[in-house]
Image (cartoon, rainbow, N blue to C red):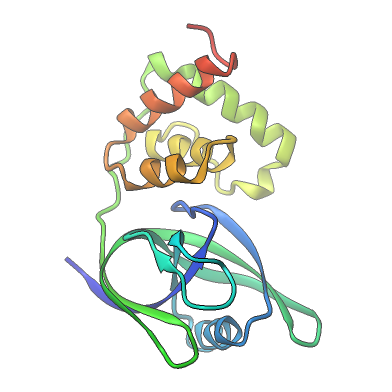
Length: 196
């Protein structure tokens, strides 16, 4: 199992593997983190906040998060950095501590990526709903498209559907892409977005 030491960006957002995450950074601790990440091409961790706030004192992160790598940036005005990060592998925090600048760093173990497997026919409604979402938002938000991969479809639906953050976190922590699709299909049926 691969272990890394990484800075943690605690947010009210769940990041999934392959997701694109636009961020506006203005706090010095995260500005320094982003600069170091871009300079040395290093990932950082994104975790949903378990307790605390996005700004101010260090928040307590959930134990499972996702590595993120900056793929583009812009500074439209001094002191405000716009970045787009892309989700990579999931990880489990083993230990964490806040530095003097308030930035949380953690020892993490990487979670193995889910094996690629086709989407079974009983979950075709998940693919159909996702196709509509991609048409609405544009393919550039979802490249490259992997509509035949159960894990990819599940993560994209979990990312885009109006699900509360704690449920999004549960979907991130699952290691079974078919179980994730089963739960998402139940949500779609409940919302009247799929027959059942």
